[in-house]
Length: 374
Image (tube, rainbow, N blue to C red; front, top):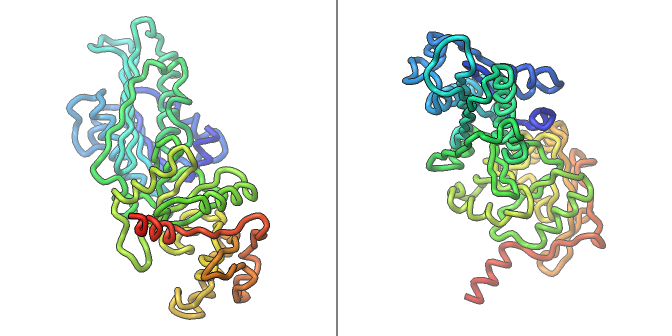
């Protein structure tokens, strides 16, 4: 439960037919109000139809669970306190042991929807699992495990313990994975080293931003410096939008994402400026080269001195800070001490000593080298 509440992702839930004990499981620990935006328990058929806007074809089915999850996602988008909060919707419908005659096996259907991906599961109960309380306990555990997977804090295989080992899980996806980032439905997506991609997740302690075209050893060195200073989780950050370039196509963004498989987390945003990044990920440090740090304090990038000073003040209020490595530039080794920092930047910038790290490689130079060799 703690790992779910550690995520910045919030959820709206709608549960019907069983498994409602998942609600107190989520809410009775500190942090529940940070995770749970809305809970609905439309138990009767009329209530379910009212929640969905129409009666489902079948009360307990995979299709109904997915319809509930999509409606819950819409609720989450409406109810989140600010657009920088990633959200998911989770819907469940169950037919559990009862005191009346019912056709069909006892089962739980659950689904989580993030605007692009649906994580769906079916948990059937055999005739040997006819105890209602045991079924409720298994359903509750399955719902919490699915939510943990949906918000990215733990993969399903780590959470699907023996009571729910028989659950059948599948993933359904839309056409354009990053459309939810481009259109603002999800402020950021985390790509994990094991290949999972989920909205939000735990805010990294530090970020190494870049275009990563391609990723190279200097990026790795910055990441390692960040980890030494701030501890896990440290992540790279790639913005799919740029101040002076067209938006990065989804296919190209995902191609660059593959470079981090098995290496580290990558956060995908639509935040081209550091102020926008800090609004999404408050408290995270940025580990950059001196050339990037110079742009942070140059008025030309803000349209004037006063907007720059205002941006630096906002960065400070958001808990941002910059850790700066020296960079070889046009034959000169540029360091933080060489930059003219305005008073608003005092305390926002720390230097990485040159004896520890110097950034002498760039993606642009590597691409030029490849072109020359080609």
